[in-house]
Length: 265
Length: 300
Image 1 (cartoon, chains in turn green, orange):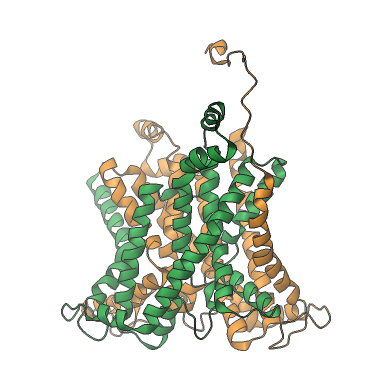
Image 2 (cartoon, each protein chain N blue to C red; image 1 turned 180 degrees about the vertical axis):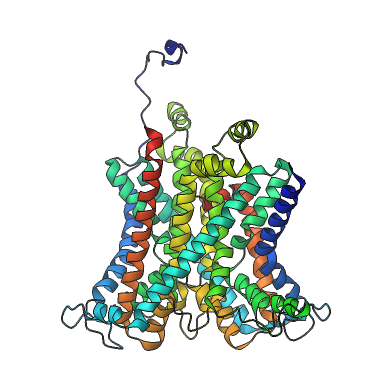
């Protein structure tokens, strides 16, 4: 290998990695900056912006909303998704219908988030339903379901049927086979899908932007509206906390299931 | 190969039956999807065929295509469609080049380094969209890190405006979509026997020839799914254009927000939603069809 090529390759790799990491590193450095503006290089080390972010009721209130909303959407969306995955993978139906059902259940991934939000806003307003929590929950369940279906379907398709047959031969009832054999085997996949759905819901801005009202906002939207009028490092502090939380969640999924399965086709 | 060896042994018992679950298990989810996604989107598309009237969101009025004529007759409106298309195309093109390079870096990395490289490549996805965008604002702002560095080095005399331009939107989009592209290409690369490019190099093929004649053709499926995913994500992205392109970013999605949240002309906004959906479907099907044609000769 010629030395010039190696040098060129190393420089290219370094530049690409810098591009990928730059905004994340910048956020973390600014978050511990003592000054009142995001200056670079920072004017000394301080954690005061973390205190400021945590003392801001707009952030803490909306963070609570986002957590409850994501938990609610995951709690409703996971059983819906798992049941549908069972039906699609094992139900008796023509294969054309199976493909159509699978495509329909994955369609929320294709429809732009902003379209989901607008469509829900218009229909629910027409129906006279204007409660922000109802709108947000419906929209976020829609975000969670495809991820649960994706992982559950993959796990069901690679499920070894002889496990269930063995349980059947040994005299287990259908309910017992489901709760003691099938579901425990699928648990990591279901869990990973639910965890991913939770993160997607927690991070969403495009669907929620039309569904919040003046008294109920989610964390990403609260940060976005704060950003329009302020540029102080408390946004960097809250962003760093979000980075830490998402990273922890992602590492958790990686341990349980493997991250790559979600991101490929 | 002796075929008799691989033939299944004669079965004494009936074939094990495939475990069945009732198909109606899909019904609760399906009902939810129909009432929360399909019907609302259909309703919105129908609404686009009613005369424009700010504030009105009911179905009254005659059916008309006036809203569509209005969109396509005024440059201010249809330019959002054009801008969405070229910004997305440019984003997809840059993402393809960078994502392909990253996939090659992962593919050729030693097993010890591979985990770290994958983590770095996936890092943009692991970070909240708002945090990521704020990071870019720090980097690219008028008094941001990049401008200060360029000023400090004496390369420029006054700060160049990057934020709130189409360039900033493209940078932000490429950054977050590059992991998808890299993973899609990697999936195809991993199916290639590393001995094939090695053999080609032994026979004197240049690196460029190996890339162009061996790796590129064999990664068409991965590249195609990457292009599809990135283009449709670009067209439908809202947060990045809204924050990095400024209020007048002039993309279809930010224009949709304006119509529904500011102007309150929902029926005209419905036209934009319909066009966005049509565009997404068109792009998805055409890229997939193209890839199918390019890989069709493999199965012969």
